[in-house]
Amino acid sequence: MSRSLVTGPTAGIGLAFAQQLAARGDDLVLVARDVARLESLAGELRTAHGVEVEVLRADLADRAQLRTVEERLGDLQSPVDLLVNNAGFGLKGRFLDNDVDAETEMLDVLVTAVMRLTHAALRPMVARGSGGVINVSSVASFLPRGSYSAAKAYVNRLGEWAAAEYGPQGVTVTTLCPGFVRTEFHARMDVSQDSAPDWLWLDADDLVRQALADHARGRALSIPSVRYKAIAGAARLVPTPVLQRFQSLGRK
Image (cartoon, rainbow, N blue to C red; front, side, top):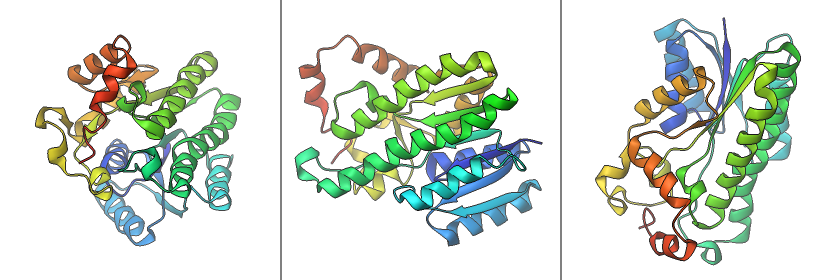
């Protein structure tokens, strides 16, 4: 039986991952800050799918707490077969409108935690010649949208390299790049779902289903829906000053 570790599993994309992985029979390790929500979700998944679910409380912006998750990924007696680096958050304001400590915390979660957990997971996976990592990035990684897009661009490059480096050794690394998704993510930023056209919004269950299918096929990149594939492709051709005119999209 496989075991998957999911960060940020209590809502949105992370919840969809936890539910779909449990439904296919994976035991789970769920990592988040809110123990009450973690325990509630764990109970639901155990009852619905008969899987084992571990709960691990950790704030990924705290290096000591992050280390406990790294140690769990390195546990050879109870190995993790799939790591889903999903935890993250965004900031509504533009760079100079945000407190630098908030910017640093976002960088810690979006970049440092992803790098360290990927590193911790890959070592035992490569040693045994099997395993997988799914890093949740964003279509924003292809666009000039401040430090958030810069952080996600790092995730893309890390994943692209790791897929090529460790694929021949039996480990599949997939980078998932969703766009606007109907979850708590934007509500936590105090951003209305009316701030972007309705046709841009995706369903979390659908995109996770596609991501898991892409991962199973060994794909290094998963961009859900034809419209976001088109946006990501066009972003490589459109000059940065033109793309910057759309920075307010999804921020109101």
